Amino acid sequence: MDIDVGNLSYNVTENDIRKSFAKSGEVMKATIIKDKLKERSRGFAYVIMGHRAKSIEAFSELNNTDFMWRIMMLKEMPDQRGYYPR
Image (cartoon, rainbow, N blue to C red; front, side):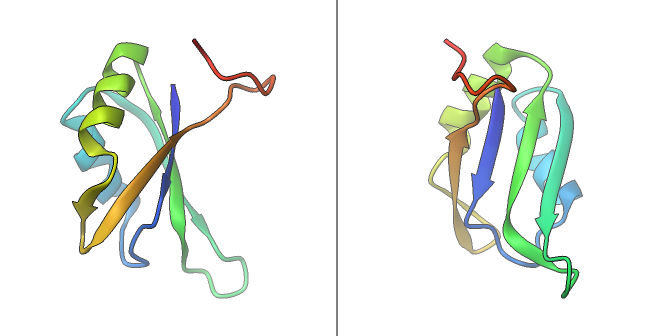
């Protein structure tokens, strides 16, 4: 399951996100979306976990929790065809 991570502090790094999600399992990729003009975080990121069961565990543990002084909000992302995995 791919996870959309929202409401992040502009100071959060990809390494910070990796460390937080790695407590639940292997993080394949963590990408912070940046503003092209200002070259700073836009306040959200995408995380891809190695195993679906571990991503579900991370989702339930981290959704709506405090992360670097902001409440992290998670959403399940659809797969490439636009379908949500079941």
